[in-house]
Image (cartoon, rainbow, N blue to C red):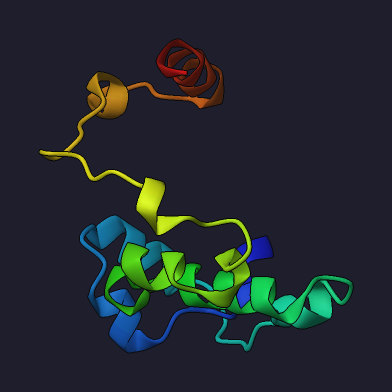
Length: 115
């Protein structure tokens, strides 16, 4: 409900793109509503940061900004140095991503092991 209060409920088009039928049924249980939006929830936050949130936090993955778009965003202008960046030579897969009982505590444990 907190997410729907912020973003609003997903459109029928977005729900139709969900992979799991149980997720589609669950989402359709909620009354359609518009969200409050990030700016009203976080009035003290810079507009560039709000824009980043709006670009990336979408129900439908196809509607989310790409990594390249996000990295080129003005919010990173003063802290990003593309000349120092490297690109992985292959897709990165973390062994714990397929863990069937991945909860917050276990995820934290795995993250600490990676870092």
